[in-house]
Image 1 (cartoon, rainbow, N blue to C red):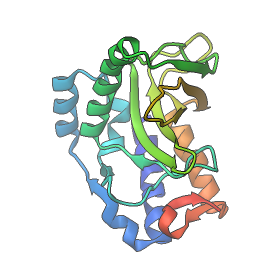
Image 2: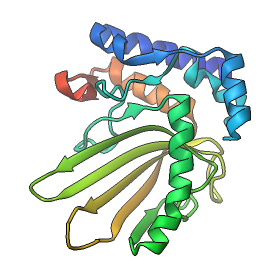
Image 3: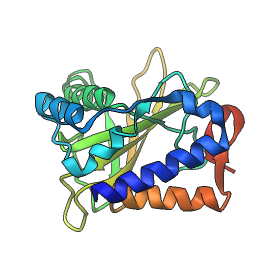
Length: 216
């Protein structure tokens, strides 16, 4: 898995740079395997060594830069890749936010694939990318995320890639329930990048100006 993932990430990185040289500036500096192992050990996030290549060639991207991943749901904006430190921060924040939801009256209506466990959030889910699309006139926001699932439901694959979409209405006088959907989009991170590379080579995904890497 490790060598295959390194190969796919190198191919993906090359395609992004060939699409727009400016996008090379958004990627974070890669980490050594020893640095990744130390961070994983100190934080206890449970990232398998087979997935260390996610942060070796480049370490996520600058959150101020353009998205380098297209959103699986084509009508929303792109997703920005997480650095290892951001993966750790978001995972802990999402775990802690369950208390806030329960005690502040924020409801969540969940629709989840049978291959994904139906719970608020799991310590075994590691975010790898995220995005947000705002509809100011409608006072509506859609948060999109990709995460690795290392404790799937029956029928799932360990390390499967899950797409999560959370839609909320933003109102000053009312707290509306969130609509949260989760869908398995690839059995592994290697499969995910293999599919993405294929779509980029076919010209269906590419650089779209201010949208970054997106569907055409």
